[in-house]
Image (cartoon, rainbow, N blue to C red; front, side, top):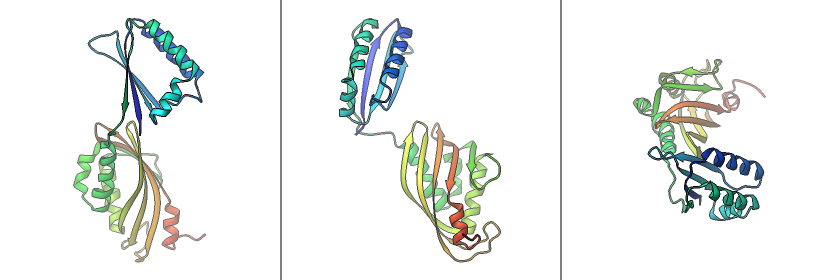
Length: 232
């Protein structure tokens, strides 16, 4: 389970504090166990700062604390603070799943079930699409995804199995397996009735709950072989 440590402090010497943390990061490179950290400043009190540090587990956090550089940095940090910093240790019992859920809705509700109206709800109007099947590096607009889904659904009766999802910041990576029956023309290939399987990974970047950019990587060559369109 993820473990989070919150460090609450007041200091009028934040620049010195910032340099101290940069030094600690350099000295502990390759040995520290923290996976992510952010620092925020209180809008109502310029000397009030909160640092949030994420670890894979409580045990990893304790290993990080036992580093000699960590103890030395802590002593120097206390000297820079106007008062003793306050530490809060949190076991994470729920992570934000909203971005993952939005992406799952696309694969299940839009791509598989064909609810194209949901695209306006899930995608930003200026969505940017990167697709290995397209010559141009990127195409822009939510209508791009609408047209792509419609064309794939005209050519195949298909569904997605979502094998795994990983979320970091604003991005969600989904590893999927696609299974379809070729029932309409596809890339100039007349319908064959063949049942096909293809794997791929899609990375979506979200903004304010909507999908803003997407990168598609999938085994199109394998699909074409299954349709007897190319030979080994």
